[in-house]
Length: 383
Ligand code: EPS
Image (cartoon, rainbow, N blue to C red; front, top):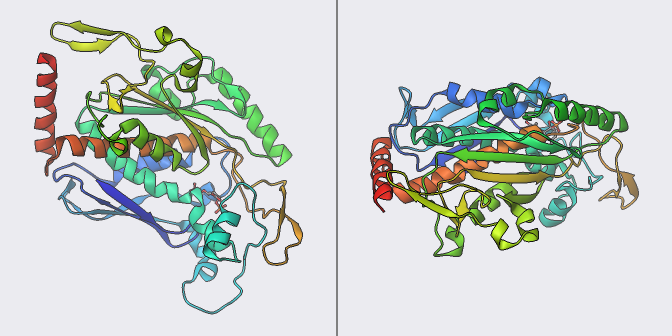
């Protein structure tokens, strides 16, 4: 299974084509809606989210509510495009364009992308570097979630730190619905109140905030990924997928960096066996992966997001045309998008896991895959 996205932040739409899905997967536009809605949420978002109401339209690969095995095309309209149609017009003319951006924002892709592609209007970088693109990825993630749900796999994403405030109460699966309904998608209402105060204070200062999100996935079979080759190790593939999310600067699996500080006896998970259950661990400090292969325990992945680069009280920079010192460009901005990033990270993890399932179990139809997963699970109990 593979996919690409296309589309600019203020262009007509975002597009994605997902290739390699099995036939027979139940899929409707309403399966995608809650995911897109969740990505738009979270306290601290800016005015753009009041303009957009993301809906993914299915444009190919699905008939009568089921995938056919053909590529699935999804399209998400940018409502804001109507305010930008002249600026984003692909036809020549109207040069220089309005809203040209020449004061590169520190921390954004503006300068590096401008140098690389030779753009002096950094909007040619910004439009594609914008995290708007993640809406398309979340739509793909929703499809992956639909496939994984058929195989008994479930996931949750939540904020564990924001603006330096850490949650004091850990996530429990029973809290999942409450977490999704809470303003910052956290399992700890008390810490959440302090995070909201931090967001309000940052907003008043014209500043932005980062944080840490955690994703858990349960119901996975042991044996996804492989130890035999570097690019088949699932931990490496998951880390790449997570690091590709805009503004993510660090990834941890299980204990993560804390494992480096503990002795081995307090890091590795002892192995047990029971009749009818097979092999299992009572602890999960490995976060569900050993040797680049899933262990069957819960997958636990954290991602660190830096604060958004567009500051309302901008940092000093240089104008790429005049070379004069300048204040960084100031577009409207979110104060924080950590809750939304959790949804995007979850989507990227599920896409990677869906691809790993399809690699291990193959199958042109959902039914074939289901049968193969069930047969493999039976074999594991006898192993
Ligand atoms: C973004 C800047 C803002 C955000 C945008 C990401 O957009 P605008 O420039 O239109 O104000 O709202 O995020 C989204 C549009 C979204 O859907 O998440 C940026 O520069 O990365």
